[in-house]
Structure formats: structure tokens, C-alpha cells
Length: 412
Ligand SMILES: [Zn+2]
Image (tube, rainbow, N blue to C red; front, side, top):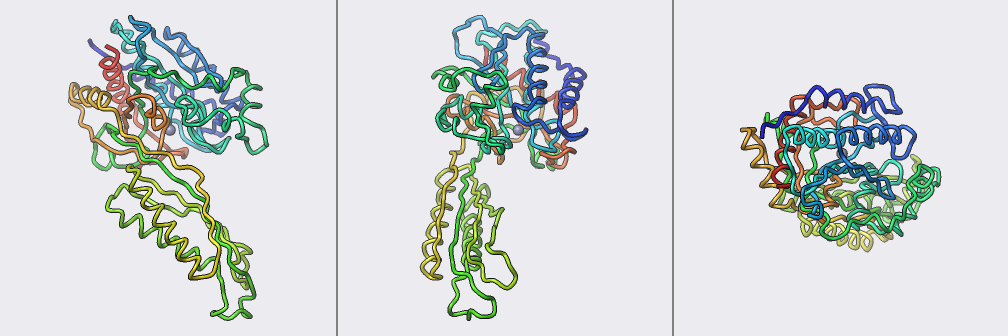
């Protein structure tokens, strides 16, 4: 089998898709179910159909483009990613996995490969949380990680629900039918830009992702007592911000002393009330984001934070309330997919690194129902989610080639 990626066509298509944007070039803004997103979806469907694939869409707009295998009832080999983009993003996040996946399938068709298992390109709905406040809406529903009833309660900033919006744009099916049946997939593999700089730093063209880290996020509210910055003496204070400072440092300490470099913890937001120079902080709200590739280690950090919350509340006479917003489990890649990916790299003598994805992706959720792995290609300076995001045509084509080989192995 002499696989060849049409690098020029792939590059042209990446540029063409980037033109569907609500921000001026080179920035890309493509929020789910906006008129711009719908135009991009229609363009993608045409590309899939003209490549001989059978296209279907589910009730939340996940789009499947299938190359029917010789054994049409055998479990499917999947690939794909997303085409939605956060405000002022770049051209490559998600898109490389969608158009690279399509080109990988076309390359296999050009050399007359006949898959035993159907090979299916999947374009996930709303990987980005921009509109409905939750990332990976499509893959959460496909995998049953998010219940349709909870999905129905999600609203955008204008108060429009997922139900209203999807119905208005023509996705009228029942959300209960989005979840894929057990055994749907034989395997799933997602090509993606790294969104970090490890590959570039080590001058490696490919990363085989063995683990996907997952975040837990919390909102912590500290209630103390306000008062005049001159009038209330130090022994009498119940300063909410001083208590919050103890929590932040304890969280940092817990992450640093977890014993693994994969443990990361961040307080990215700190709202102080009433936020006046001569007023003691009465209330503070913190956002907490803890990530790890190991669930028990990550939960150990959450436990340590909880212990500090109790101790600090007692010591400082403040009330501390902690609300868990989400706690997805990390994923381990499937051995069958890793082996297909590494064999493909070795066949072409491409150097690669086994690595961890610290950002999460739709593959994290598909891993609940199928053996999954990801293939990373470098992106310049690790930049992503910004207009100067860049992946070179050579790197993209190499990724698509390894993806094509991998799909062939898995679908045989
Ligand atoms: Zn992405």
C-alpha cells in the first residue's frame, strides 16, 4: 500500500475552513450553532460527501461521515475532532483532526484499500465551552457521560437553552438517542495539535498520547466579616481574603508535594467583596482547577484542600463553602490504538514521543466507550487558542499519513 497525503489540498482546505469566521483573518471565531458555524458544517458535509462518505447527523449535531467496510456490521474505527473555535482563536485546533482525518480516509481510498471495519470521521459538536459553559458537549452525550436531562438545562448567555438553539438550527431529534450503543467502536484515534511546546523543544515531529489528564473544578466561597480598615483591630478581624490566601498556598503546596510532575493546581479567579481600599474583605470567591493523569493523586490534592478549608475556618472564624463543579476522570489510552500508532511511526521511520495530554479533548469522553489514543503534531511556540496558532503543512501531512496507516491497521 503506497499511501500519499495530498498536502496541497489539505492545506487549501484548512485555509478555506478558516474563512468561515466571525473574526477577521488570521483570527478564527466559530461558536457552535451560529450562522458561521452552520455554514462551516455545510461546507464540511459537502467535502465528506464528495469524498464518497455517507453522512449522518445526530440530535445534537455530531456529524458522522462513514466509509462502509466490507463487514458493515463490525464495530467502527473512528477518527475526528471538532471545528468550533473560541473567540479570537486560530485555524488548527480541532480542524487538523477533522480535515487531516478526511484526507487520511481519502488517501486510503486512493490506494484501493478495502477496510473490513467501517471507518468513520466524526465532527464533534461544541468541544469548546464558549456557548453553553461546558466543554465536549457532543462527546459527553455520545459516551453517556452527560445525561440528556442535564444537557437540556444548559443555557447560553442570552438564556437560550440547548433545546431551543439546536431545534432552531434544524437538529430536531431526541437527545436521548445521541448516546452510542455499546460496542459501537472498535477503536477511536484523534489527531490534534499539541497546544504545548514539548515536541517543538525536543525537535520531534509526532507525539503518541498515552494519557489524557482531566480537571476537577471547584468554586470556594469564604465568608468573614467586613469592617473599617482603621477601626477594627487585628485581634478582632475575620478577614476573608487572609483566609483565602491560606487556602491558595495550601493548594499550591499540595500539588507540588503530590510526588508527580503531572499534578497541577490553579486558582485563576479571586473575587473580593466589597473590594475597597479601606474595607476589610468580607467575602471572597475563588476558582480552583486541579488536574492530574492519576485520579487518586488528583483527589488527594482535593482532600488536602478540604482539610485546610476546615482548619482555616476554625482558626480564623470564617465560613468556607466549597462547591464541586465537575470532576472528570482522566483516561488511559487503549493498547491496541497505541500499538497501531507506534507501528505506523516506525514503518515510516518517524521519531515520536510517548506523552500526556494536559488539555482535555473529546477523546477523553470517547475513552469511556472505546479504546482511544491521540496523535499530536507540534504547533509553533506551543501557541493555541490565539490567532497566531500555527502548525506547518509538513507536520500536518505527516500526522495525516500516520493517522491513515493507523486507521488501516485498526480497520483490517
Ligand atoms: Zn481542540
